[in-house]
Image (cartoon, rainbow, N blue to C red; front, top):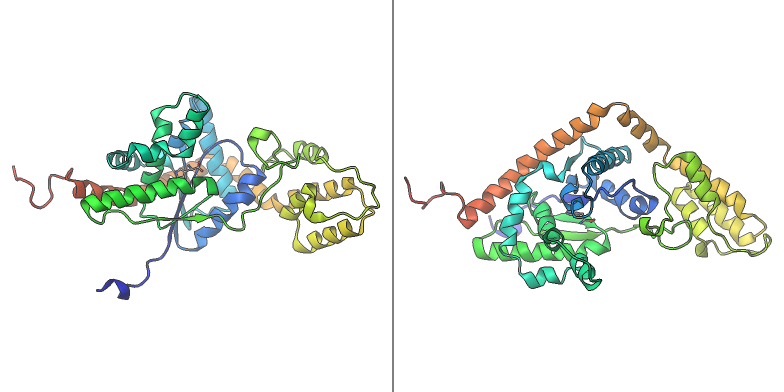
Length: 339
Ligand code: TRP
């Protein structure tokens, strides 16, 4: 069948998420929500990148609990194991083997230009080979599942470019083995301010966490910095990070009402903070309930991950077999000498 009469292939979505601790609003509204929405588009794979996390987490008990928590949180936030395949990266050893095959076609110069390694080096910090080859493992993650669409944040686009380069180099040498993926930079990803108005980030210690203890979260919200203009003064909601946070979690009608109140003036920020506490509680109530149910049934999340690993391995082993055959590691292939 000529190429142009082939039916379009359905998208196969894949993304990896580093288990770096409890997700904050920046992680959720900036990225995770959009990743999860894509589970409706076609076949989808989401994994917890524990092998990548080993480049920063060196405490085994902590790594185990980070991986568990990330899985629980993702399912609680709406990742549906009946629709998407959720698994842990290291449960699919095919990926690490594939990573080696890709390593043999990865130019040093290409990896030297990658920012995670380059930044560390430019700051005079020692880097290990795991960090240096991080983009190769990430390429294997993507290629092992024939992923076509990889939703990522802006900071990961360079790594997808590396993946495309390596896939191209391998295909050029050995034939069409790998499917070419495309990055999908998360759209509609909100820029989420922290409680101090800077970008929300763990390193600035200004986060609101998705599953934070409500009392702790309330205290943090009450501490959000605000300006000292008089109560009566009209204010522009679009220039206020307290409003921006409220807008993320409030229903549309309430958001409009709040914006009007800002423009009219004559309100105190304390009122807005209280509304934010309530809106946040409502917004995440369902996820919180799902999370409590998952935590109460520890076998459940492990069963989801085990099932995900089985499904993920089924595909990755096919792709790995293809790659092994193509580059001559498979001795049973036609033309190989018989013994
Ligand atoms: N490096 C990604 C991050 O830090 C996580 C990741 C690992 C990933 N493997 C991946 C993302 C494959 C997309 C595809 O965010």
